[in-house]
Image (cartoon, rainbow, N blue to C red; front, side, top):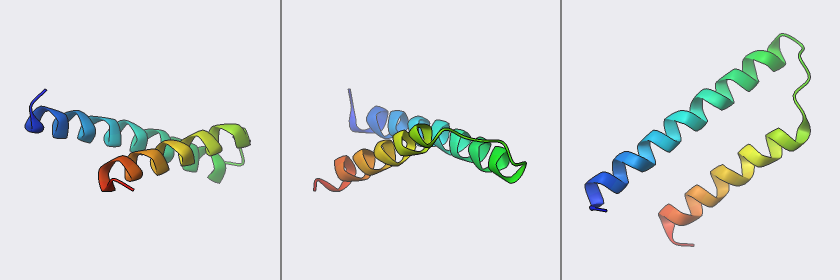
Length: 56
C-alpha cells in the first residue's frame, strides 16, 4: 500500500472513531448508560493508533 493510501485509510479509521465517540458522548448527555468496557476499548484504540503514528 502506498503512503498516500495508508494515510487515507488512517484518516477513514479516525473519522469512524470520531463518530463512535460523538455518539457515546450524546448518549451520555441523555443519561444513557454506556458500558465502561466500551469506553475502555475506545481509549485503547486511540492510544494504540497514536503510538503507531509516533512510533513509541
